Image 1 (cartoon, rainbow, N blue to C red):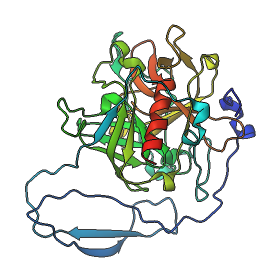
Image 2 (image 1 turned 90 degrees about the horizontal axis):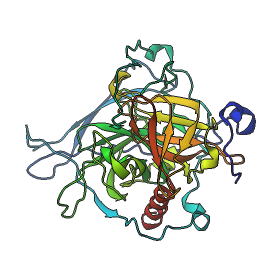
Image 3 (image 1 turned 90 degrees about the vertical axis):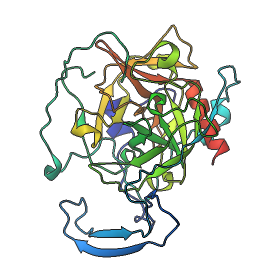
Length: 374
């Protein structure tokens, strides 16, 4: 693996696009519902074909499926189970990346095409967006600014690697962004998690991940967290002290959605890459469609903190980010690898710069989560 990422402006020549090598598998897309009731009851369903407002594939038909569950508890809220977890000590011996490359490689399924930039949004889905990119902010490090000119683009592309990213919803009452880093392993930010003060046994409330989420559509279904790995429990809305360096978690999901979406590889950020325009980011900002559509930005630089160790450091940048994009990946491509590697996740913003969290401790979490929960 080459030491230096491929510069963004030569990705087409060095990496290139790729069409799908195999047909889409006859897979089941699973969406789990949690329904209150007095006793378990079989579901009845009605299925009817309807006319779609828009579908990306002209050969795709649309069906309305109505599920009726008898004997439910009407007017009663029901929430998914919380997640158990494992806090990793800051004094632990970090696993060596070179010894665990199989847990850090990405995966590009044969049934997915590879695009280095997401396709333009179809005309039918385009909307006018109003926002103030120069809204006044102070120097507080808010849990995740837009630097004029606006460089984010909205997309609905579900090719690889865009389908490895998605919207994360949690018991905290909001949403964040995240990316698959293993068959059922999700990287997102710690400050989006609904941490439980007195865990017994759950350490956090429910976590839901929806790859390629767009306007309520979930083309790869959804998955729920069952276990979480973290080093520091970060609580927003502001990011303070060491939190800016440790704002990441790895969530183990209840099903291997990565078999359908693929996943990104991972790597420790190296300060020798400072200033190089290698990097891209995907997230779900609140100022564009209320977090219901993903945005992409590429061709920007990262800047690791030279005064902080490579194990866990804040990585500054001036990519355009707004709350909701927190947890979204900072990723680049390496020569001779068919998939990108992420080096950090978005954490905070202020008026002069934005910050992501990365380092070998983040990579260590990914290795341990994948080894313990294959």
